[in-house]
Amino acid sequence: MKYMYTYDLMESARNTNEWLGASARAFASYPVFALSLNPVLPLMAAWGEVTERTFSRMVAKPDWGIRSIVGPDGQDHLVDVVKVVEKPFGDLVHFHVRRRSPMARKVLLVAPMSGHYATLLRSTVSSLLPDADVYVTDWHNARDIPVSAGKFDVEDYTLYLAEFMKVLGPDTHVIAVCQPAPLTLAATAYLAAEDPAAQPKSLVLIGGPVDPDAAATEVTDFGRRVTMGQLEHIAIQRVGFKYKGAGRLVYPGLLQLQSFMAMNAERHGKAFAEQIFRVARGEASDHDAHNRFYDEYLAVMDMTAEFYLSTVERIFKNREIARNEFVVAGRKVDLGAITRVSVMTVEGANDDISAPGQCVAALKLLTGLSEDRKGHHLEPGAGHYGIFAGKSWRLNIRPLVLNFIDRAAGKPKAKIALASAQ
Image (cartoon, rainbow, N blue to C red; front, side, top):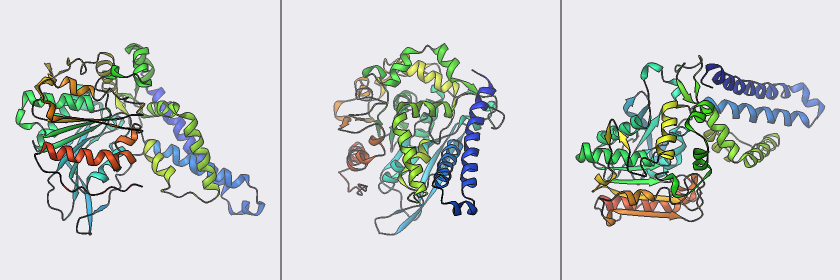
């Protein structure tokens, strides 16, 4: 499957569906057809509008869309997204709040590289901005990175994180969401051995597969059923000529999206059918609940083949971090070297991606860390998305995380801005 034609075939199918949607919408919207009062025409136009939007979003990077926040003085403060470190495969960006003094809390939010852009954490960033200076890892779409930039695997990812932590300094509090949890843990241990003074104050791991075997999910079962040779054959393709990364081996975002959609096909099908009828009745809007969710969910990015394959092989199959056998740049990373970084894990009781037990396993690996520096929270009734961006995050988990950060910094419990329950 490592051919350009398979990659271009998927892109051609996506592009054709986008064109069909636009054509149907335009055709059914001719004013002369309004005289017929045919109910099929509004439905055709609605189907075309939803279809065009759906397939166009698959290749567009969403905007952060965080224009301003309300400060403690009641005034709006504009927010600028500023690049602090620029690297070929990802940048470190800062959400700079104008006219605001530096905050006591400095947070590095490590975004997943698992098929979606870092903007998936938009609501997480928005909820943290009133109480902290927020920095985020903004990973690039592999299709847009020239082959000349070289490789990028789990070791490179870990070194990127270590560099970002060093740039921000030892007063940083790191929050890793989902996929990067084990690699962020490894990056912290790497710093503990290579540059102890650069270690962050605290580390919060949210719903990540530190030990995938601690609890089985569809993700872990798939990793066990498929050999690495089979996975490379069915999942890896070569970027086509349309993009700057032409010729680069990748795990395509469109292929990942198929997997995402297949996991809950009935629910997604119902959601799109209902949206078509809402559009036909004139009840939909550009930023309604359906479009807000799917504009982000459908926006997928390619991962480098070496990153995807090394994640499956080394994190899921060989469990190198769970066994404390992970190696970076030829050096074994000892998780026991972490002795002064406060570490908290967060899990959702109903998480079907990283099931309860996979993330909290990190605490047992921190043999050099005293128990008073460890914390854990299991959120009842919360699924995977809810523990970092949903109601559970806003109402319960976020205050706990900020209080943990304050304890790690040796500060008394501070007043935390209330998050909306909506």
